[in-house]
Length: 366
Ligand SMILES: NC(=O)c1ccc[n+]([C@@H]2O[C@H](COP(=O)([O-])OP(=O)(O)OC[C@H]3O[C@@H](n4cnc5c(N)ncnc54)[C@H](O)[C@@H]3O)[C@@H](O)[C@H]2O)c1
Ligand SMILES: [Zn+2]
Image 1 (cartoon, helix red, strand yellow):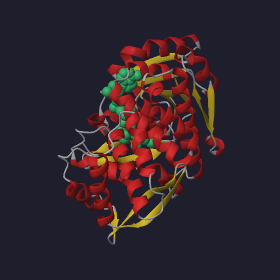
Image 2 (cartoon, rainbow, N blue to C red):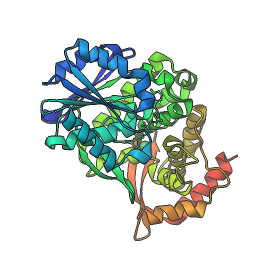
Image 3 (tube, helix red, strand yellow):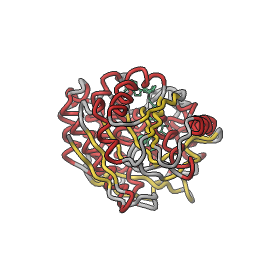
Image 4 (cartoon, rainbow, N blue to C red):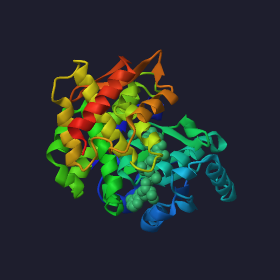
């Protein structure tokens, strides 16, 4: 078992990473919560698989448990779904001593966390993330919220959970593409802060793809440590936390121009990490070969390393312009200097990005 402490003064909390912990989750939750009423927020696809284990364990630990099933999918990360949760909380007469537990991927965690942050000005909140992306990224850092019709994550709060409990065993039921997508964020954590983690992802892709227990526990715990350290240094995202956006500026643009349909988030970020590495090499900030090394690692994990030829590169740039990424013609980008070290550079031009995208297609495209 690995235990990662997130140090945020009186809002500090642990992240537990242990294969097979799910059926014993009640003890861990009982130790950190005051009340004994728990609302488990989940979605049908996850509830079917894991709700019984969680609720039975909570009952054994003395909790009265209630279920709130919300519809899954990004299209349901809405205020209307949050309003439905408030109704459920009122129906079960949840008072301020209760706990809201999210069981699911990033969508469930973000929605449930926002409901917990705002219901009666905040009740205890616990995350049980069940996708790799949620285990290594979304469940850590305290960002919760929902989308508005005009954009993603436009309403939210910083609200820390009492504990995050991660059971890598639940990933066995996750579709492979979702697993691979989460691995992109793991590689990102290696590149921004941890050579050892990066080397593991480079040398052990097979263990990760076949979901070897020890391999998953290792990369998840390391990822949590890295994200926790970054978040601790900059809880409210005033500066340093931006390094977590490595690969994301170009990645988001690729997601947008392909209507969030062609690539998963992690796939788009994978391509964006290679673009940023090429920009860094061209600018003389990274040694030649870094981008190829990173591309090789991502390829080994079955992630894409260049956009398909049908993606219009001009539109990718336009998406960044539309997203107000350029300030006076300059783009702020997280660039790798070497594995384990990145820098935020704010002098990148449109030409730099387009040249990198063209080079990327030549070097790594089909
Ligand atoms: N709060 C943050 O800091 C933060 C960070 C990154 C991403 N996010 C958010 O996270 C969301 C994406 O999260 P996600 O990738 O986990 O997507 P998701 O929550 O939609 O889950 C992906 C799919 O996996 C299924 N699933 C979940 N667990 C499963 C399991 N164990 N077995 C089988 N199927 C399972 C779900 O039903 C869903 O279809 C986005 O809304 C994004 O904005 C938040
Ligand atoms: Zn991401």
